[in-house]
Length: 178
Image (spheres, rainbow, N blue to C red):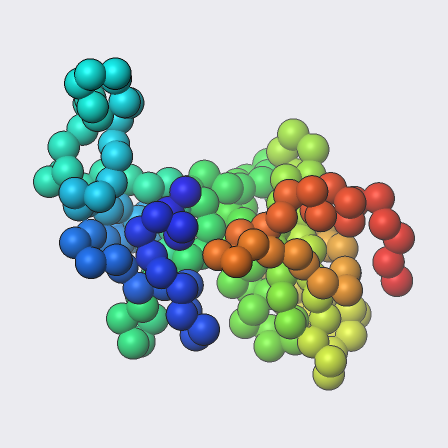
């Protein structure tokens, strides 16, 4: 997991790189790569230490991000997080989350798996918005066939690093909301 090991938190972003570590974003997908002496790549073998990677090589973290205007890292999600739409085409979780944020109508949102190839968008409505206005704005951005299942919730529980608390997501699945 990237955020807790290579970036420190800031109130306005997901983090700044720790001293001695380098990050780069691979174009065009924004896949995050890191290198540095403080990272353990490969496997740990007793008596030999880390085997399989070198600290001077950039290695994929499994995360996707973008650079903010101030140079901080904005974490967008995990590589390969997608679902199949109505036409069996892949839709990235990041695409849906970005579309939700761009509406300006959400206070928080996150996508999770819903069955084998589906997705569920957990959405916290901004005070000035309604679930109907958010749904309409999302359909306008994505198209009806690319929509995940949308569930409006009062809050989304996250760790100190902004990652979803998985148990709370499972609990939301079974809690009725209006």
